[in-house]
Image 1 (cartoon, one colour):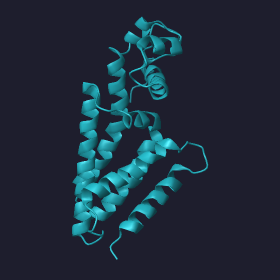
Image 2 (cartoon, helix red, strand yellow):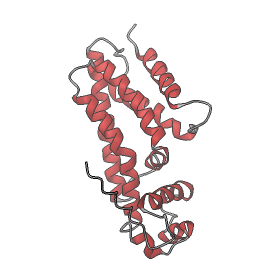
Image 3 (cartoon, one colour):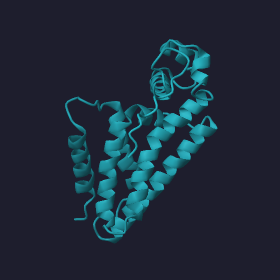
Image 4 (cartoon, helix red, strand yellow):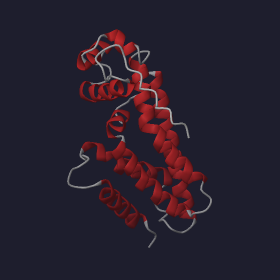
Length: 204
């Protein structure tokens, strides 16, 4: 292992400390408070106390910031769902429960970005791409539901596509009220959602 010190993170030309992560975090906060369409690069620069050129040092423009934010919301969840779908060592029911639990953890870790994701309406190419990825996630989850029904683990009187939307809808509702460090920790919330969802879906 090399003993050379790590290179310092590159900073923008504005106030010290405003690296790309800071710019993105601030942009997501503004997009959520003001709306993406109503927020300009000038607004972001004012919030950070830098010039607009300092913002462009890190990103190509506002839509680039939106893309980075939506990727932050989607990438880890996509990895979770992909791993569950491709796992041949566990039953579909157990994999489905695991996806729901991990989805809660991902949302808690990326709550501002997920909040932004849930507000996009397909008004830009970046938003359309994000919505396409969300539909893929719904389809994959519905496939796990279908497989769990085939195992005899879940009731079969509700369509898999509807179950998928309801499961993700329950998890996504956390953006409205869940706060890290609040009354309930992530594990408690994940346990509750898994219990409520799957006790109700269990085949009698």
